[in-house]
Image 1 (tube, rainbow, N blue to C red):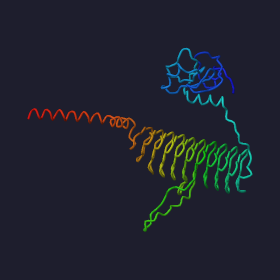
Image 2: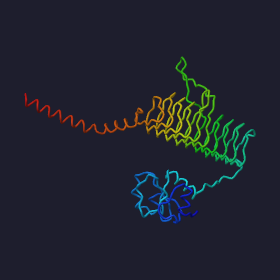
Image 3: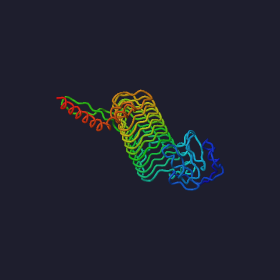
Length: 347
């Protein structure tokens, strides 16, 4: 593990030192677990009380933070969370454990085009006319269907499934159990009341630097592709229906369900268990709180919360009012009792 002077680390993070620039940093750790020689960070004010308790030699802290202790060493930066992530990468650089080559148990169709330095692990399947870019990793038991395109440096983890006509960009991470390009949920009822399946004949297009969490499903389009922009991050157990479009750098947290043909803008945040009805538009930079149900289109930049997706301040006031109801009812009963006493006295 490398050792680095605090002032050298500060230069790499584009920050400035407060304290002793010559101290040596030997590792990284959380505030509570840190020991001498470690560097930690504070990004949330609720952890300021730990600054006087931590054994860390130095702490990465924000520019606007006023809670610094005079006997501590700091690197002061604009974004402490991001800088701590970069520090972790400096001390623990990623190491590839995947050697290029095709395992003897893998099944790769002769028509598939395989790039340079590709790792294809045990029991992997690669279908007809698929194209696998350079430095791609296909881990054990992953499935790549027909006419799939996978961009350079993408990693497909064990058991991930990529069905036919899916295009995936560069540097993506597809975690175990995800299913990309499955049929959308589309049916039409005939005269006898029988549900007839609508063919889902288009594909799925995923941009660069996308992460798809474990057991997340993204369906193919009906007549035009489902589209996922660059830098989108999906948590585990997310469902994206057919013909959805998601803009760049959007975060989709666990158990979100997005109905068909909905268009979601860029840099949107969808909290856990958000449900979005079909054929809606969610504007850029919108933030939807956990468990919110969205039944109408959402303008850009708004923050919504609550079961019916109200503005977050309104939803919080309503929730607070519900907690006060028992006390209010008690006050009403007391007033009614006093009114009754007065009525009895006055006859």
